Amino acid sequence: MTVGLLSLLLLVLAALGFVVGRQKAIASVKGDTRNLHSLPAYYGMGVALFTAVPAFALMLVWLLVQPVLIEAQVTGMILPEDIADGSSRDLVMSDVRRIASGMDVLAERGLPEAEFAKLVTDTTALKTRLADAGVALAADINPHVAEAAAVYRAEVATGRAWLAVAALALAVAGFLLAAMRVTPEFRARNVVEQFIRVLLVAASSVAVLTTVGIILSLVFESWHFFRLYPAKDFFLSLTWAPKFGGGSSLGIWPLLWGTLYVSAIALLVAVPVGLMAAIYLSEYAGPRLRSVAKPALEILAGIPSIVYGLFALMTVGPFLRDWLARPMGIGDSSSSVMTAGVVMGIMLIPYVSSLSDDIINAVPQALRDGSYGLGATQSETVKQVVFPAALPGIVGAILMAASRAIGETMIVVLGAGAAAKLSLNPFEAMTTVTVKIVSQLTGDTEFASPETLVAFALGLTLFVFTLGLNVLALYIVRKYREQYE
Image 1: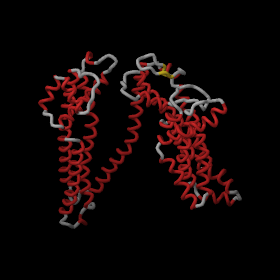
Image 2: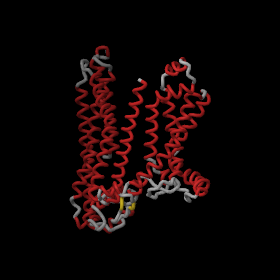
Image 3: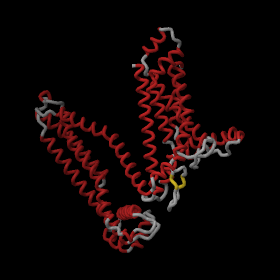
Image 4: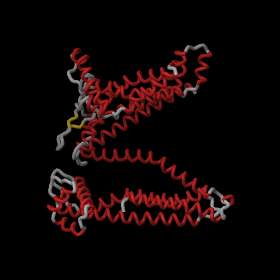
């Protein structure tokens, strides 16, 4: 049974539980709902929740644990001689999963189960059948790998069957137990509200757990990388020259410099323009102009970054090259830090403007009125009252724009190129950390070489860097906020 079908059955059981719980509550008081502790709907909701939620929780845990257990079992079937030169156990397991998925496709097309035993021993025929099913394998299939794929497929099917049995049994048990508790004296509303409170806490914990998971994955993979490549060379080397196969120089400084350089230019474009636009729209523009200008400005936020990248490649880059770089003799390429920074700054303008506008509008009108009552002009009120009061929120908006700039990839690829270098010339091609993370993980890669694992070290470094910026911003925000509270 597929997960989708099982989920649908659980939802049907939950809906049935709601109806049964509600009707039983009404029947227990012979239709006079005034004798119930709670409204009839709460009794139905209680049965529905105890039917569906434990079963879905079991499904979630099962789907997370089952692949780990199956892969641990199947991995032991792969012998060291089954791993080709230049390959790894992870790559072999990838082939096992692909072969198993191809077998599922063949089964869906009507291939009898008895034929799979023959195909496992005849790997040439298996490869031909898999190619017909759309699973192309470059090398011949090792018999041990084919056998491991068959076991993998069987274990997955068995796990799905047991999952269906366990989830349905738990749902039925929850259904019966909750229905048996339906009596006029049962505090259904209290139980349902407590249950929902627990669900809300669990939902709010998703973000925290996700963050912890991201950090742990980066830390463990980075630790694996530093076991293969010296941390001193990574953090102190000024050369980035990856070579798959060995002999790489993986210094982070050229990438970090390009990231900071492009982001700084982007913020120099976005922050002044965005803040001035926000101040004008919130303090000076009339309602009619504001109703047109603000949506028009926010349209920029909805344009995909790849479109900005094409704009940088075809328009801004050639313009800066022909009108600035070449006449000044400081560059001859349309791909440059300046190109990517300017276009990225244009993309960030609505982030700064829209958020700052909302923050400025949230400043109490009493502060403005008090300033005007003391004889201050409108510009003096904006500079000395409104802007300082809104500064903590504006700093947050700028930080959001900075994070967006640091994480941007497509504009940098098309606008700044992919050259990792240390240079002060803004009209030279450079690259950023995010671009190299993508390039190192593109294609058929194995997570066992420093050239691939370096992507996680780059990601962890970028994470620590942005975390430091946030801590610094919190310090600044608190310092200024104390002056206006």
